[in-house]
Amino acid sequence: MRCRSCGLPESGNQVLTTDPVEVAGRFRVRAEGDTDPVPECCDPDDYQSVFSGRFARRQTKRYQRRGLTPAAQGIADFVALQGIERATVLEIGGGVGQLQVELLRRGAAHVTNLEISQNYEAEAARLLDEAGMTDQVTRRFLDIAQAPGEVEPADVVVLHRVVCCYPDYAALLTAAAGHARKILAYSHPAANAINRAQFGTENLYRWFTRNDFRAFIHPPQGMVRTAQSEGMTVAFRRHARDWDVVGLVR
Image 1 (cartoon, rainbow, N blue to C red):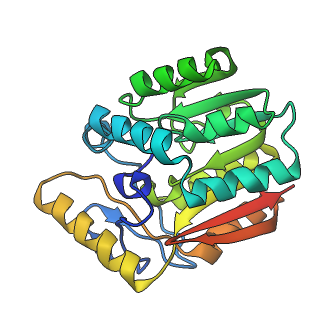
Image 2: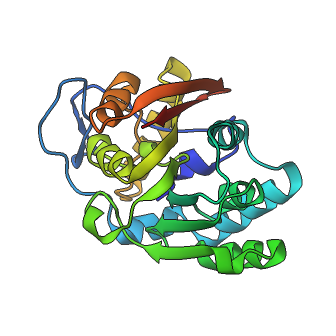
């Protein structure tokens, strides 16, 4: 569930504006207060092409060489500060699972990962095997925004570089917050001019190449209000380069 922009090193990103306009004839980006239905997420084939096996290998290599990105580190620090000993974790769009490894090292008992692309699995299995954590992670293929009832709640729910990949942030964050017994943490691209230009350029390229995958810069306060509507309170904010991290507690 992780967009290409949301999975690159933090200095290189992509996505769109939050104005209520048609994007490449398919996705409608929601502005604050926009309640119109938003189409379902991208075609599975487009996800597979963006989140390829090559992309997964790059993510693993980056993590093994440099550790977590600043935004991912912010999520891990916040969750650990709240108390993660023996906690269950649900990660939505965890990719190769580097954040999961770090949370398990800090005391989490078990992680369930939800994914749309199947191209992460070989690298994720290798990473878990090397860390000796294979038995502590369950990996599933499921879109929680479309099938929230098929996922069990967890003490901690995290989404790192995922919300920007999903057209309907309200549906995604409603499902995520609704499954968080204690803690919700997510990262999103900062809503600044540089990110808008970079994201827009890559989305335009995808339109020209007939790839329907799009990435989005959603309204930060709209995302916060969505989580708050599920009974959560903001307890943490951090700006990490061109990414922002938000942590909430119940």
